[in-house]
Length: 231
Image (cartoon, rainbow, N blue to C red; front, side, top):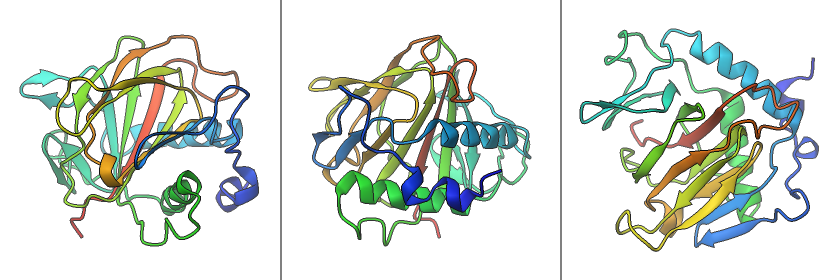
């Protein structure tokens, strides 16, 4: 078994992307790096996902304004519930969520460096929570801002499994201008700086589009790392 340190070392990451899928900056601070995670890394993370959902707080669909989301979420570090963060999952079973893993901190820092081409971009980045969302083929995510955090440090997003249509918009409202981008298994998307509070959402999941060997038989896993600023 490959050690975690080796699995996420510099020479194990492939950020060149497949032919026709190139690095793009959609807006200042918003960068898409296709095929950033190798298949081996994806499989390993899927294994961790199964451990997380079997942990002290089960995966669940949060309720927003009384309506259950179609996406199911398990959290690390801090537990997100609309519109706050707590250490204990008071809206589920009252248990404390799992700690934020060190390897994910290192991966988040690497993501900032490679998305910015700035070797010091990750120096001060220490994410302390991750929302790990599972989408089945019917799940959607409405346009929203990630603004429950006190910190405005960048959000680092990783996709594994089925591809989806990711709608990335403006910072003023849910309407146009926005752009639809395909996020595939292994893709990295980072948004920070002027784009940190951009509205975004998932309009569609493409069932059966996950690559062989990614470790996920159906659906899509999305990991979003954030800095809560809660100390």
